[in-house]
Image (cartoon, rainbow, N blue to C red):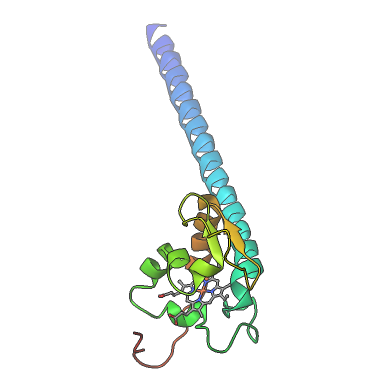
Length: 150
Ligand code: HEC
């Protein structure tokens, strides 16, 4: 029968389309999972670097609630400033970091004769990306009013 053949062709097409759609769903799910996995890797790397280097002076979220150096602003407090992203985008060039932090390819070379009074921190641009991704997740500290930062 011509009709049943048409129907079976229709069913074949429908099956084919469903299969294609199914594959598309699988492939995109896989993509999302991969993206999430790489986000996780980036955040873990960022946390490790921040814990290792920045908590020496800064209090950072729950990493070192009672640590840091009293005169150094905490990450949470700095994130309450409207331009915190700009500050974190270039932190290595802002005082006091240039004497401690060196970013490969960006920081000027340390003068050979200059004594290092503390352990130097060497980072590359990938490290900086990871640090910034982690800083995004640090909770903002509500200081209960505007902060006057110079
Ligand atoms: C040797 C101590 C020390 C270390 C290590 C350190 N910081 Fe800082 N940081 C400071 C001090 C002190 C200030 C406050 C400077 C000021 O009051 O102008 C500061 C300020 C900042 C600021 C704000 C700068 C500005 O001028 O607005 C950012 C952003 C920052 N730190 C990020 C970081 C990150 C990220 C790390 C880790 C890679 C780090 N710091 C490691 C001491 C340190």
